[in-house]
Length: 164
Image (cartoon, rainbow, N blue to C red; front, side, top):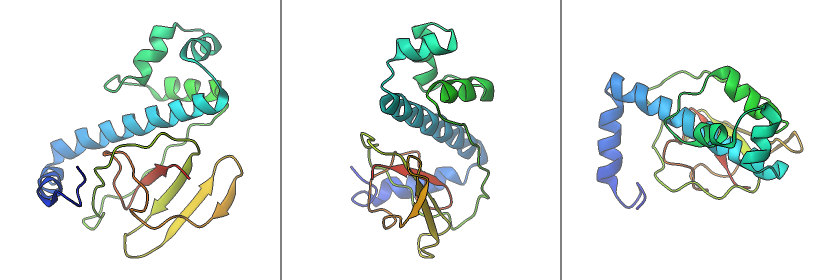
């Protein structure tokens, strides 16, 4: 059920996000989920199974599985190592928290075939920048909310990923 069809769920989440402790855990889980989803997409693009990724970094398959499991506390070194093994770079972005960050989309994450990034400053501002990592060229981003994102992604003021 989406937030659009269940406004009570969105209202509850908005209330919870006003609590600093909840917001911190929410942000940590969102970042972890985002990294894991992007790593799995990178592995798929590279045609790498977990055991092959593990071999590239000199670790066990179970280590890679644990890294992809939400809740594991990954270090930046490990994240960078995993990304590099898939021929990707790890980038970290800081963005300000704002009261008008926009709604949260509670749709399930798509099965990614192409990774596109967008930065949305405000849902009404249409200040959207997107680029396809494979081609590294600018292209117009879809409308805000036009494509489902994972439940941890905030629809404005943050980095979103969706299938193109």
